[in-house]
Amino acid sequence: MNYIVFDLEWNQPEDGLKTEDRVLPFEIIEIGAVKLNEELDAVSEFNMLIKPQVYHSINWRIRKMLELKPGELEKGTPFPEAAGKFLEWCGEDHVFCTWGSQDLTELQRNMNYHGLPDLSDKPIRYMNVQKMYGVMNGIPSQTKALESAVDALGIEKDVPFHRAYSDAYYTAKILKLIPEEIRRKYKAYDVYHLPKNRKTQIKLKEGEKQIVISTAYPTKEALMDDGIFTALNCVKCSGKAVKQKIRWHSFNQRVYDAAGKCKEHGYLASRIKIKHSDAGDVYGEKATRYITEEEFLEMRKSLTKHKD
Ligand SMILES: [Zn+2]
Image 1 (cartoon, rainbow, N blue to C red):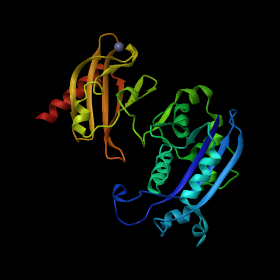
Image 2: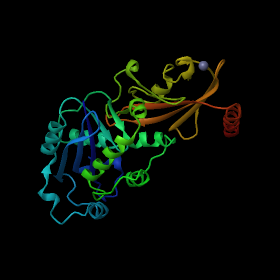
Image 3: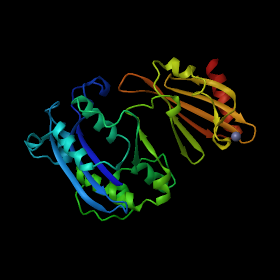
Image 4: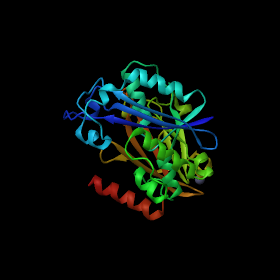
């Protein structure tokens, strides 16, 4: 199996529109990648500039960051051809690795826009090197910029930053420095295509914290009505549902909270973030963690305060 470490550069027009109101939120203008063998050594590289077909005016910040010469992009390869070459270069047996969680989604969005076949009809398991780097530092929620990680790890900066290839190159160097245990344990899933049903919903563990990504629902109400998805589960009891002590509530209709108590393992709190898929479905990301009695009482107090 190979590791495909890739990075995309994309253009975002300055049209004053909201990202979700555009036909394509971000148009990919460059793909860079490094293929690694099982030992995480580079065996091949991929680098391609893409001729814009949707947004012809390149945002000046992006032009400056990429140090593009006038007309350089117009000489690039059209996206369908570039994506085809990239996937052919990737080969069959591989796992994608990226810095952060956005690249695999944007790749699939651009492919969909151009009418190319889907990479998969299900969530895609990949390696989020940025996340693994945070775990390695003991702060899983940390999202460090690539260059600051390169500096902190003392990696030689022998290629200029902020091009797709260079960012893939450095991400690959960092991946090689991540301990094997973290590489194996910290799974990530791209959910451009959601889990097909409740049985295949995604469960991730981060220490004692558990994250569940639901399947698709037509509405937020349908999601919050699903007693199985909204159950409070004790990870230490292999996910057994525990008694709810504070009912699901929300102050902003995007994030819902609830808390319960396991007889054996104490108080736990769950938070559901309501999300929307490109296909127009609603899904939820539920995170459950253990809390202290003080935190539990605080949550109850804030709920009663809100009611008044
Ligand atoms: Zn328990």
